Image (cartoon, rainbow, N blue to C red; front, top):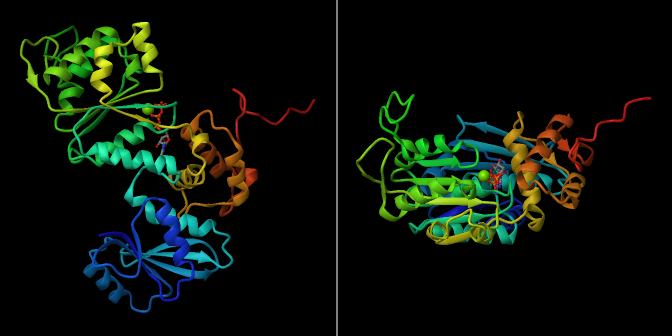
Length: 365
Ligand SMILES: Nc1ncnc2c1ncn2[C@@H]1O[C@H](COP(=O)(O)OP(=O)(O)OP(=O)(O)O)[C@@H](O)[C@H]1O
Ligand SMILES: [Mg+2]
């Protein structure tokens, strides 16, 4: 099955669109395939019902009609949302075509990847997802470790089962133990009802242990036992309960140093690090920047379609070094949406915070 079929009798931008979609790792055909997920029709449509019927025959879940030479970039729906109409403005400098490519690609993955290094990471993650092995994701803060974990779960045979994420750094030690392993009624003061705990709640699915390097040593030993024996003993209970979970752990620390310092158990690290993956700093994967910026505009814009990203704005984004990675980019795009009034984000709407403090206008003396 092709991801996207583009039928293009009079659609000049079809090849450029195909290339932009292939860049995003999608399987695109110009012309029909027996089955496809999305049918894209270039040019005006005279018979909407016939188009919907054709989509039904191809098994397409989405039909998108692209009108060229329109007045402005616009996205509308007809037939109760069964057809999406996208207007490409006359004299488009490429911004609208790329926004269309993003829009077409968005249902295929919540994880945006356009840079070759990210595409390679995604393809490795897709492969790892099929095997029931523990995964350790290392990478700087805000670089997408949680997004990648979710992607692995969604691409795994456990996709229909729970995905439970727990941030080991955010919860005090005694609470973390109770929340992870569960407890019986009366196990400690205040335990008025039994609690399943995250490990049992994730049964059949995936447990994400975010910032695992912050897990206290005592709990590391308990977790190791769960992973080795595949059983959990809730607080206040004498009975072991079998558990079937896949664990993904993340950290932004250098784990070998944590092991050398004695703050992280070596045996647990090896248990978790069966398949290591690494997210890269945003500045090291520049081709992701515009695509992620547009994804953030779509995520946070109250308007549909979201404003377009101008080349000038893009150039400012590409010149920045992004110490806060994708999370910082997300904030910058949210600010741009506040600052921009019109349908396009210009360079003047990109407000980067270079120091610890936001740069406020100087007060008059
Ligand atoms: N490839 C991506 N596609 C779409 N959104 C992304 C991508 N990478 C990161 N994000 C977004 O950036 C923000 C930070 O991502 P995430 O929480 O996964 O980072 P992290 O590496 O887990 O950060 P931390 O180390 O601080 O926990 C989130 O809003 C997430 O949705
Ligand atoms: Mg995280």
